[in-house]
Image (cartoon, rainbow, N blue to C red):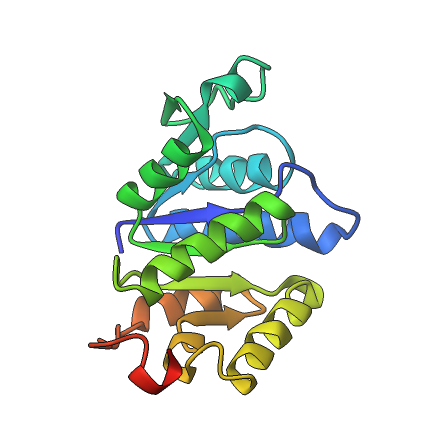
Amino acid sequence: MRSICVFCGSSMGQNPDYEKAAVELGTAIADRGINLVYGGSHLGLMGAVADAALAAGGEVFGIIPGFLASKELAHQGLTRLETVESMHDRKARMVELSDAFIALPGGYGTLEEFCEVLTWAQLGLHQKPQGLLNVAGYYNSLLQFFDQAVAEKLVRPIHRALVIEATEPEVLLDRLSAYQPQTVDKWIKQEEV
C-alpha cells in the first residue's frame, strides 16, 4: 500500500479516545511510509489524523470542495491540498489516490463515504480493502446492522467480509495489508432477484 484514505469527523466528539486513536493512526500510517489521503480540513479528527501523520514525517494529501475551503476550513500545512468542485468530486478523487480506506469515528459524512466505497467494492468497481477502526465500540451498532443484513439475506456473507474491523490502529493496518480480494462473478444470485 502506498496510500490510505481516512474518513472521519470534522469534530472531535466527546470521547477523548477518538482523538487518541486519530493521532495513533496518523502516526502509524506515516511510520509505515504510507501516504495519508483525507478530506483536507484542519478541524476535529480530520485535523488530528493529518497533524499526527505530518509530525511523524509522513506525506498528507487533502481533498476539499471549494465551498468548504472558502470558509477557512482547509488545512494549510499539508504536503498537497487539492480543491475540487463538489463533495462527489472529493470522494472520487480520494478513491483514485488511495489503495485502502479506513473510517475513524464520524457522523453522516463519514458513514456515507465509507458505505459508498464499500458498495463500490461489492459491485466490483475496485478491489481495495476497507476497514472500520472501532474505537471504544463506536461502530458496534453498525457492525450489528451489517450482520442483521446478512441474516435477512440482504447482504451476502462474502460481501459482509469486505468490512475489515479492529479496535487498534496497528492491527487494522496489518489486516488491510494482508487483505486478499475475493472475486465474485455475479454479486446477485438469480433466486435472490
